[in-house]
Each structure stands twice: as C-alpha cells, then as structure tokens.
Length: 100
Image 1 (cartoon, rainbow, N blue to C red):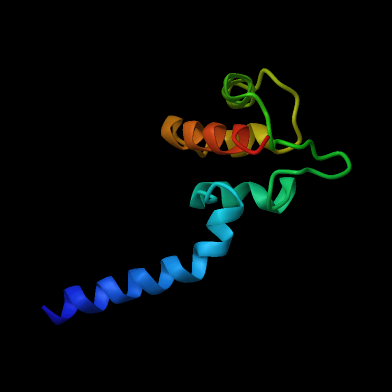
Image 2: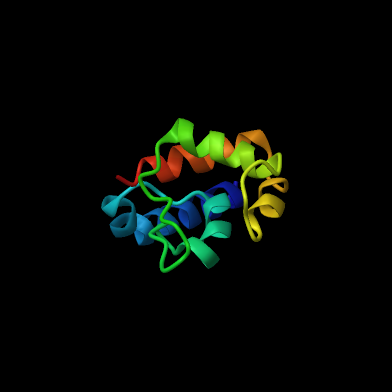
C-alpha cells in the first residue's frame, strides 16, 4: 500500500511541476529529444539545418523514408533515419507537425 501512495504522490508532483510547460504546447515525446541536437529544442532549425517544426506529417514520413533508403542526399540523416522504428517515426511526424 505504501508503494502505491508513494508512486501516486511522485506522479502528482511531476505533473504539477510540468503543468506550465504542458500548458504552452504539446508535451515533447522523449524520442524527439534526439532531434534537438541539430534541429533545436523546438525543431526550429538554424543556418543550414532545416526547421522541422510545422512540417507536414505525410511529407515528414516520406522524407524520412527517403533518408533511410539513401534516396535523399544527406551528411548524416541517412544514417540516423535507419536507427528509428516506424512507430518512432510516426511519433516524430505527429509531434513536429503539431508545432505549427
């Protein structure tokens, strides 16, 4: 019983601390954090790195598949793209397309 109460309290604290951040927009999926190193925390891009925030969902998936298949020129994305599952790509496409 103590474990359930302790876990519930921990979850309540985590959500109350995240409250303001969640109110500002969609919660960032953990898998999207891997994009932040190049594309920025919100997918805004900079310089030669393109913005992916607001990218059309279907186009995002198509471009990702082109990177995976080495059909789109890239310095590193063709290697990165092969490391993600289809489900992870769907999460990324949903998230970044929601940042319009």
